[in-house]
Amino acid sequence: MNDKLYKILLFVATLTMPIVCGGVMYALVTDAYDAFEHFGFFKFLTSSDWNYTDGSEQYGALPFITGTLMTTLLALIFCIPFSLPVALFVGEYFNGTKIAAILSTVTDLLAGIPSIIYGLWGFYTLRPLIMAFDISPQGSGILTASLVLAIMIVPYAASLSAEFIKMVPNDLKEGAYSLGATHAEVIRKIVFPVAGSGIFSSYILAIGRALGETMTVTMLIGNTNNIPDSITSTGNSMASIIANQFGEADDLRLSSLIAIGLALFLITAIINMIGKIMIKRARIA
Amino acid sequence: MESVKPILEFKKTCVSYTKQTMAVKYVSAAIERNTITAIMGPSGCGKSTLLRAVNLMHNLYPNIRVDGEILLNNENILSMEPIDVRRRVGMVFQRPAPFPTMSIYDNVLSGYTLNGIRLSRNQKEETVEHCLQSVALWDEVKDVLNKKGTFLSGGQQQRLCIARALAMKPDVLLMDEPTSALDPIATAHIEELMQDLQKEVTILIVTHNMGQAMRISSKSMFMYLGELVEYGNTKDLFSNPKDERTKAYLTGKMG
Ligand SMILES: Nc1ncnc2c1ncn2[C@@H]1O[C@H](COP(=O)(O)OP(=O)(O)OP(=O)(O)O)[C@@H](O)[C@H]1O
Ligand SMILES: [Mg+2]
Image (cartoon, rainbow over all chains, first blue to last red; front, side, top):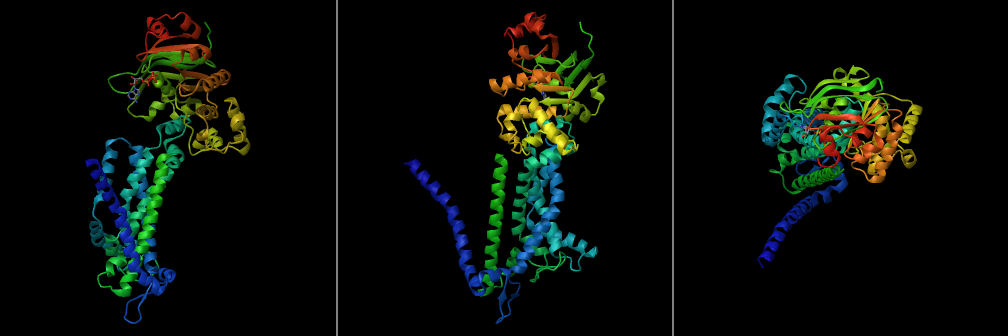
């Protein structure tokens, strides 16, 4: 009897998650419906107007999709030259030593810093530097946001890649050494290829984080609503436009923001799913 | 006794993993060219440790100390570059581990690619065919050379790993219980193969299988607690062991 009750409770609790997820989806879709109906699904995603003057209202998501893709891609590019060495350092060169343990603790610590702190650091430290070096006049923009985003995703990419680098069997490495390979050759020709799909999936998951990161980007991207024409210009990402405008928006504009949210939700979900599937595959292999 | 110049000579070779203890203690022995020498002894007596000293595997781990001398063609390998030594002294491990990202073809050539040595297409094909033939694997895999080496059976994988080592044309081949993960048929294959290989290369093989030692080796070493207790012709060592400890081990009263 007790056992049955326990089972029912467990079942109800478990069921809550899919219900919540379905509820979120449902709310997003119904609220976004107006915008898609008014502008057309495809048109909405490819239009670059964002005009909320009464009477000539016109909304399109393209500037923000571009902003998100640019910041994410740049963040990834900036992240790799830092996270890959850290992963190699922790997972291969100093695997099992105290230095590696300290380094991975520090990286994990970085992952735990709230994004508002990164935002403040970016705003008060990095932005003046960007202005001082004359990279952009206003300091904020795609580049600034990407740099800070990159720092934020380094810990994820590094610690996950390090796990996969550690998992490369010693048998294989010793096998390569026994054929006369140097450490560098073992890393290039054995460790990277064998850990490759795992490392790749680590970066996919890091991208998943960068895509949805809101606070830091909102503080640093400059918050303008046109398509950024260079990496130093200002813009808005899908997340930052929502954070910026949801408070004052209603009707069609609110629906458009929610439509952007829905698109972001789907992109992030797909990216994360791909990453998770790849990680699972890499673990099994 | 023969006065052939040894290809490999241990001179008071010692290996220690920790400061306090030695896993191999003052081993001295001369190995003749083109022989098969079996290394026997109870588990933990230092067989693998001694074997791994010969291709400087211990250099990979900074805490391990190797002392004394090991001469390869009269040159002390302990003061040579590990890479040069390892190209001349091949190794086959207990568990077959072909490189999983490489095809069978590339596995055979992996010693060259790993070292950045370029071969012409002809050289590559010759090397692959010759090496796979000498491990009696060619007929089984010649139509699937582009498949991953990990698709093969355990015995085939081990033969692939031997081919991989042979491709570098080593002077000495170290084998650490190469057949312990294999079934009797695959084991027989590899034993037969070693008999043939003897013409090209000097083999040191660690084995727990006394039958195997008797079948394939001309010389045998018996180790106990890190020491080389007895070393001589396999026939003599089995029929007439000089040391009590060897006798006890061979009659199954130890280990
Ligand atoms: N990496 C290591 N660190 C510390 N001690 C080790 C290490 N490897 C081996 N030893 C110790 O050195 C001694 C010899 O080990 P070794 O592996 O050479 O034995 P073995 O004769 O090959 O045994 P087996 O027949 O079980 O393979 C053992 O006492 C073992 O505990
Ligand atoms: Mg051993």
